[in-house]
Image (cartoon, rainbow, N blue to C red; front, side, top):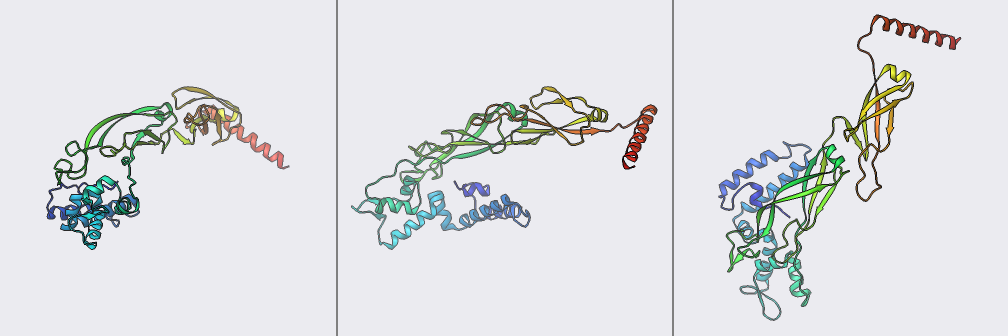
Length: 339
């Protein structure tokens, strides 16, 4: 659904032409592609601002927009066809029935083509109530919340049929002063949504019937909560597997040993280090990764502990001598191998 042009420019419907021009210039400078190179969102916003200014800065277009809302262009096309046909006061359909353009577009819920189809190409067939549009809402969670599952309370502005005009946008042929001809008003709504364990970037949680209003008799659309997961300082996610770095003292990497690893669930588990473990080696801990989402295999992914061999920062005199002795022995072994 296209955004309201007044909302795009941050203006009231009573805004003067001077205020429209000032708002356009301010926003155009901020979102111009030359100021935001490579930013697709800014580019789309700039196009939206230009389109809003194009309509609202033209007195005739603005008047039609104020009367018909997002359907103003279809209404204009309908009126031109009406004039071309020579009808007086309204389009006369077969049988002599008269139609009001704005009311017809609102009732049909479609464009100019769908109106003509229903009047002249569809016989007596009538379209049923229009379903409201689906709405998306993005929420951010931590990796720990994605692991355990969580809930979010959403404070939304819900589009509801205007109670004053019963969603028609008009009262006795005049534009409804409450909804300004839109047929709907925004009301605050509080919703609680459950984010499932194992959620990842792009996971969509559907709340049926919580989207936009379908008008006086149409069903509501759905609300889709789209999840994004914040990066974690210690864990890297790869599908349902997690990768973490574990520090291993040089003596344990050489001789073998055991170190402690913390999981995303908060547990600490013992990790066995085989002798002569190389720096960067990944040791798999089965079932300690992220939960599989519903509909997939039960259980969890794995935790991959990547070894980071830690060298000592200081050596005692005895340790230094031992390392020197080790170096001499390994040099001797290499020389013997060459001989």
